[in-house]
Image (cartoon, rainbow, N blue to C red; front, side):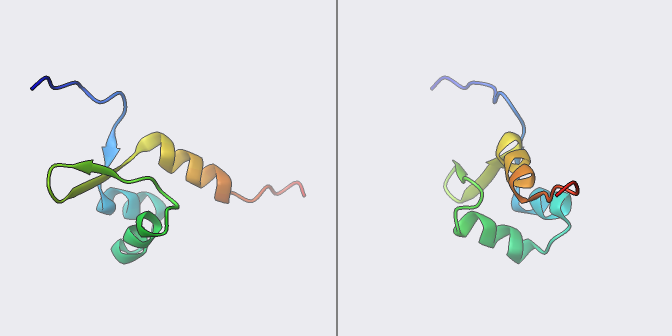
Length: 66
């Protein structure tokens, strides 16, 4: 089996929770609800991409000029 190096960091539920300053359960819910895209790693592992998290943050950021 050929292994390729990921093009960007893959984040765990815990890393997403820390970045967003939310609980671990809320981070899991973001994946469950489809707000963040799941990437399966192994049998039980789930990760999210750095770029998807950044896009989520940008979608949820309020613009102060309005």
